[in-house]
Amino acid sequence: MNYEAIVIGVSSGGLNAMKIMFSLLPADFKTPVIIVQHISPRSENQWINLLNDKSKLHIKEADEKEKIETGIVYIAPPNYHLLVEKDRTFSLTIDERVSFARPSIDVLFESAAEAYTSKLIGVVLTGSNSDGTNGIRRIQEYGGLTVVQNPQTAESAYMPASAIAAMKPDFILPLEEIVELLIKIDTRKD
Image (cartoon, rainbow, N blue to C red):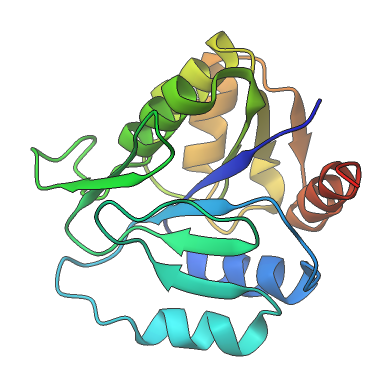
């Protein structure tokens, strides 16, 4: 299967998980990565600079109507829901919080599932609420690939455990093995 995008949901413990992930992803990784990290509405983007220091890929905040490009990592800006439109551009909204969060993982995952259908990979990582559970289930319903961090290896086990309790993911793996899987899938594109 030729996957066209990866969506990742992460909350508590997410900065450490993303530091590890982006230090391992190679510079020639092509599949666009779109992330919702639960952050304070007043958060500055210093943590994105920190991730860029660890990463061989370009990491940036997603912008309204921005076209999704290969080889870039997009992160939802603070206090905005990030949606993927059918034309593979982003929309930002300030709609109500979902699972107490804005940005919401479910909102990103559900909109991306509709845009990419079976050509999407959904990943739920460490976190301390159930955001992402409905979204990853929707990705599975559309035929996309679903990956959940092994709760025993997550800094905060609740979010991955919630996803696993709600559906049967294609893979349940420790973080480093998730990265290996994504690299393997990405290199098949050549």
